[in-house]
Amino acid sequence: MSASKARAKDLAARLSALGLTTRVEPHSTYTSIEAEVPEALPAEAWREVLDVVAEADRFGLLASSLTGRTLWSAVNRAVPATGDVRGPGHQR
Image 1 (tube, rainbow, N blue to C red):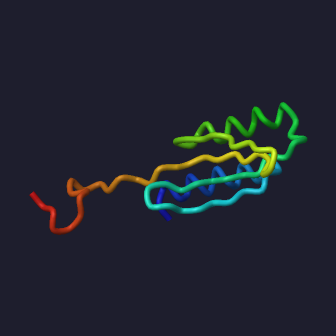
Image 2: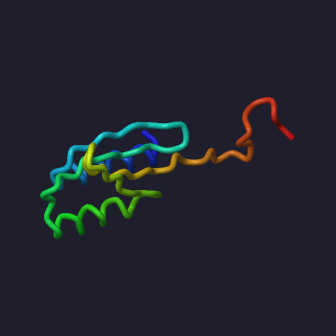
Image 3: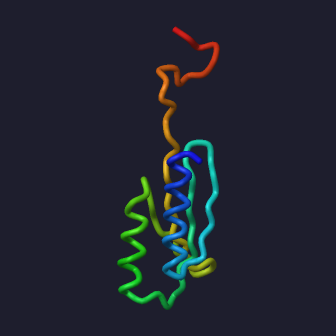
């Protein structure tokens, strides 16, 4: 398992331990972690949740009267360690 994937799974597990239901989804350049935030989340729990998502590369909160509140975070995938990041056939 790549370091970025392990990091995303760790963040999701820590959010789950705080009582949030999480979803982890891989994308081409990052892995996203989403969690539904209940209306009744106590203020002290928010501090713990923010401590967790602050370790991600990006995070935010989507809030809507129709869909509720969804906390999202993203962990960037690692850049290839080789000098050729353009792919085969694009060598210098």
